[in-house]
Length: 79
Image (cartoon, one colour):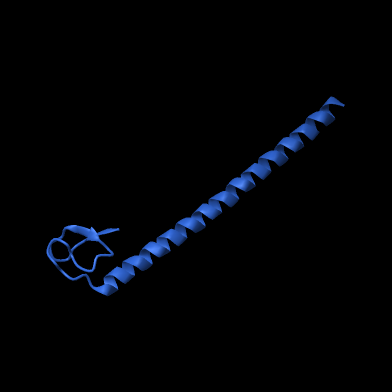
């Protein structure tokens, strides 16, 4: 993830120990907090994807059940 250097404002990697342009030392706390934020975002995305999968499966199940009920209803109408 790119972050602005506090000294020269150029974009640098959050994993850099110092800015390759001006030499400003990146505080380890900043790198660690960004790493934590990235991990949290990845976990949130995984949870969201899992939730979406469950929702999609539920929709398919409801669609199949509605189709079966429609077939039963049409069969009774034909009798």
